[in-house]
Length: 492
Ligand code: AMP
Ligand code: MG
Image 1: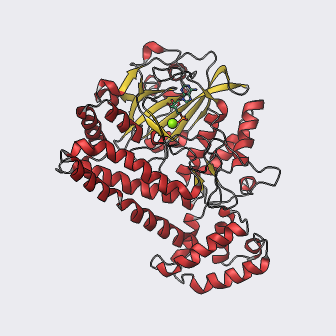
Image 2 (image 1 turned 135 degrees about the vertical axis):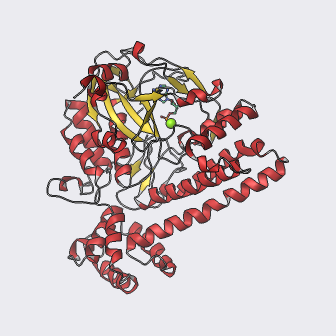
Image 3 (image 1 turned 45 degrees about the vertical axis):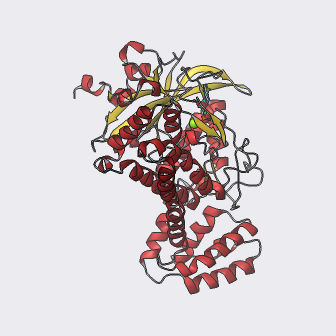
């Protein structure tokens, strides 16, 4: 075997350098005092068809940890703006992230390789440019959970402990997340381009996105309208998918919304245990702006901000351009409603054309909330009932067992007889989600004792969240009352 070839850097180019200079800044990675590769996502590398040799090599580690600046062609930090909780912030940008460049997968697509927590940049403001180990472990587990559930997301490729401590509420260890994504362009990136007041910058950005991600649109005269339409539909589907697994992003600011509709920037996000439509976990979301049931409304709000940046691209009278863009934005609701309804029908084991069951579905969700039932277990046990397994675990979820018996009777009258729905129910109702208390347990063991065993077991389970085996049962249970995590923190 040619070991020299194995340790060649997999980073092939730096595509964002093709953007106008205003859109990024060159920035060096800060040094780490004692870097240690504590996790490498070999499954993901296999998916990409990229050899793990370089990532495991001393050279690779030194580059990723910022200790070998000479061997990497100048990394960049990207500029973006954002509406944070509705408030306009003209300059945000990668304040603690460095784009190293792109890798080519064996499907011939380009994947961004970005470091998060890799030191200060031009956009750091008062921040230290670092990420806490806890927040990195959190992003790793939750993004892996999303990928396992088949939901579009940025990915976690590796975790490097820096050996340095950072000051947050306490002094805690810091780490670097090696993150991959189809793109790191955000709605906020378009807002930043628009803020330069130069149409050529917005146009260059839109053309770049079309060229890199939606080349099939390139030859249309109305390509920008079509781009907006694709983003709207993809976002509508993404938000529906989040909701179908009880996921709450927590900080749906425009700077955290990806143009290619990957779930992006895992902060105080969470999967809910007991179902409650207005559930919020984030400690900073005091008014429930980003609650579970508000996510579609917020997505439309964000997409309106994106559409505003497209107005000059249409080269029409402003009122005409706005009318056309509004027509596109109006598509969100029907696209979202369809995705959510189709997804819910599958979860309940109903036929896809059984739209008349939607009243029963809405009533059932109200009942789930009133009975304080765990969202994941409800569908998981219902899937088992549908397979002919015992009803008892399902009925035990109800505060009032009689209600459960009556509900099952109603459900039986409506459910599909098609044997394929059994398979379908199984494939949309996960057994495992990244439950908060389990995430916390994994972080505590790693952060306090350097013990990665819980983290590693959990990460493995989340790759395949639909299958139970004898060695992964520890991650099924909802929290006991003492274990419940009611709030999540940015913990950056
Ligand atoms: P986030 O809450 O992670 O989406 O970050 C919002 C903004 O704050 C982005 O511009 C980040 O780059 C920046 N930021 C967050 N944490 C830090 C940090 N420790 N140092 C510098 N910038 C940061
Ligand atoms: Mg962010």
